[in-house]
Length: 426
Image 1 (tube, rainbow, N blue to C red):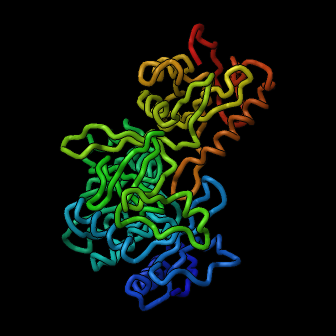
Image 2 (cartoon, rainbow, N blue to C red):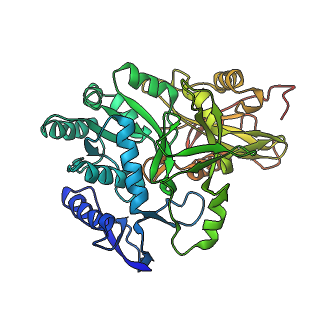
C-alpha cells in the first residue's frame, strides 16, 4: 500500500515551523500524508506523489556523493530515534531549533519536541549570531523549568565560543548535540572547559540523524566495521530505503545473519571505551581518502592534527593532482582571529608527529572561511576547486612539482608552498 506525499516549503519563521510540526504530527500518527520538507528557496518542480504506507517523512540528502535522493523514514524509526535520544540525555525536554528543518538534524528537533509534548523555540531571522542565539535561549528559559537541549553544527559552535554572550547562553543547556561535520577536538575541549555540555553525534539521514553519541551507539543501535574499514550501522532507526530507487537500496543496505545493516560511506574503527561497549572512531569518508605515492591518507586524521595547532580554527584536507605522487596532500585552513595560521613546516611537523610522515601536507592554503553546504558541512568539492584555482593562478602545470606553487597571494587565500622532505615514502 502507499500514501500521499506532501511537499512543504519551510523557512525558519515560527509560523512555518508550527505548520511543519502539525503536518509532521499527522504523518507520524497516520492521519495525514507523508511529509517532504524543502527549503522555501528550493521547491521541487516534480515532488513525489506517493510513498510506501509506513513512511512518514522523505528527506532529501545534500547530494554530496551525487544527485540528491529521497530517504524514506518511517514513523517507527523516527520515534525510536527520538526516544533513544531522550533516554541517553536523561529525559525529554524543550528544544531550541537552530538548524534548517529540511535537513534531518533540524527535523529531529521537531520530532523530539512532539514526543516531549512541547513547542521548540526557533532562532530569530537574520542569520546565526551569538546575540540572536542568546535571545532565543532567554525565550527558552521563560518557558519554565525542565531540561533544555539544542543541536548545532561545528561552525555555529565556533561562532558562539568566540563571544562571551554565546558562551553564557550555551551553558544553559543540559546537552548541546554537535554533529553534521567533523568537529575540532580543540574546539570541543574549549567548549567543555567553559562549562558547555557538548555531546558529539554521528549519523546521517539514513539513520534518522545521530545514532552514535560520543562514540557509543544509542539503545538498540548496533555498530560494526567491515574488513575494509567501512562503518556499518543497524537498528530500529534505519531508513526504509530510497524513494523510487531500489538500485540504491541494494547498494546501501545488506542483510547479515538476519540483521539489516546500512553500509555507510565512512571509514571507522572500534576502540576500547570506558565500559564494555567499544567506541566508534570515524576516520572520514571512503571517497575522501587521498592516495599519495600508493599510500592511503584519511583526511579526517590530518584535519584533527591541524586543528590541534594553536592558530587553526578550521581545517579541510584534500588531494591536489600531482604528476609524481598521484595526489598531493593539501591542507586548507582558517586561522583563529589574530593569527596568520601555521606555516607549511609547522603543519607538516604536527601531522607527521600525530599521523605519520606520509600524511604530512605538501601544500598549505590559508583562507578566511571554508565553503559549506547543507546544515554546515564543509563542501570538499568546493575546497578542491579553490585549491585548483590557486594552483592555476600560481601558474602550476600538471607536469611540474608542487613545491612552492602556492607561494604568494591567490584569489582563494594566502598560500604556502614548501620543499619536499627527502626520503619520505609515498
